[in-house]
Image (cartoon, rainbow, N blue to C red; front, side, top):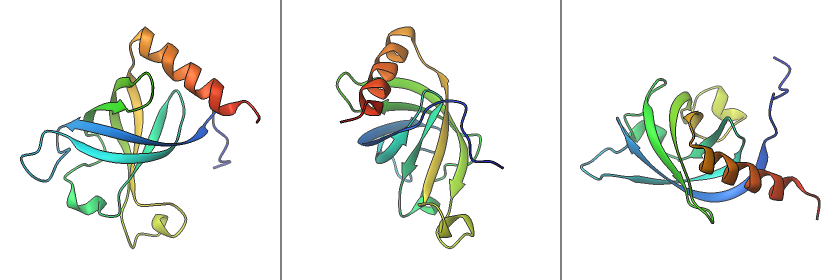
Length: 121
């Protein structure tokens, strides 16, 4: 795999709320995580305790990126990096998610955020 991406990924330290199938280990309605980077196609959600959540590849989640203005979308988990796994030697633990539904206004907000973060200076 070349590592090249079809879309631009930008660095951003932001809080993310998720809800949906397997999103929480208890009766809580939402889970709050962080992300380090994002693209128009997806992002990675960090957690040191990925195995504590019943989130698996294929899980569908409602995600809210807490930026100004917030971006809400539906995502599908495409990767889980567990502590102690071979992948965890190179990548942080957590969940890689792909955006599957993004309303036009939210897409415009996401593009503006990416554009602002990718500009030098």
